[in-house]
Length: 393
Ligand SMILES: Cc1cc2nc3c(=O)[nH]c(=O)nc-3n(C[C@H](O)[C@H](O)[C@H](O)COP(=O)(O)O)c2cc1C
Image 1: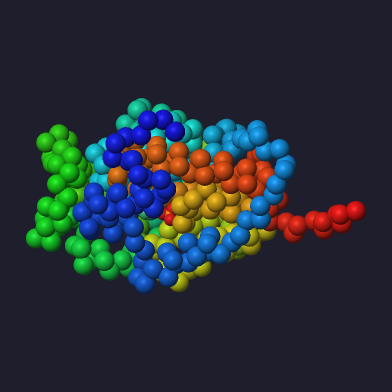
Image 2: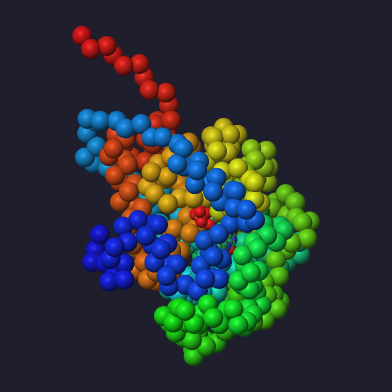
């Protein structure tokens, strides 16, 4: 790793970065990122599933030449990780989406810009560098979705992810307690929380107010765009969307298309039958339906259903290189990460995100060595039953 930003010294793993983020962000914003829906059963399960899964070490296999590169949709990337879509990243750090995009580019992995992000996609396309993907929520009025899709296509975003698991507003009671909402409330509680975090208040909120003004969700369809104090994001939450809407997006987007939020093998098949090139096995990081199973636990059935003919990615709970190895052992081609790079951004902007990605890359390299793998595709073999040992003569 290169010389570390002073504020990152002592951050040896993703949990350390989370702690730095907790100390820098106002309570309401930290919990908005950190927590899950309702009783956080699914949030906890995502982690427990990784903790329960074992990796069997292999030894003396000459693993001196290790390489974690993979190719997704014909493009090579440095590691089997993708920065997943997260809304409002620019509230964690001034211009946080640009910082995260640049960190991903430097790490040689794709960055996914969320439709509920603040930086205009034009700015990310022009200044972010690297390989860029875009994430869409669909609207029942297809022209609204098409407007966004066409904009992303013209700008050269490579992969379109359509997220389908958020058709009802998730129940996150702590956001109500913290009065974290859009339109943003200027309540005594919010001001109190911000007062305890002067670095964030001056370097993020005050800087916006002195430069570009109140941050705006600038990638929504035009008629829905508003700033944080305005009418708020109007998500398509009447539940009327169907696979026909997905087919419509397919007809409009010529590049690779992924459906995110798939947990059931039948839905994985429907995604592929609607023309998608693959799926992201995801429960929105435990932020949507509480009581959904862990993504790692449903992964094998989805890989059985569609893995042979399409790309299966996974997210939810990735905090260690061993987690990446476990997901790949069970058939994922790569993983998406939500909170892990966000903790880096919240702690120290681009330097923090780069540090998060470097930690994970180093950990992947180490787990490769300790499990006898020189390429990440070999993690899949770790899943197989050990061969019978040859008896010692
Ligand atoms: C603060 C935050 C915002 C998110 N916003 C979006 C979003 O705009 N679109 C989306 O598809 N998923 C969104 N997600 C879900 C992530 O893409 C991803 O599925 C999830 O975070 C993975 O779990 P992990 O955080 O444990 O890695 C968000 C997650 C977080 C933590």
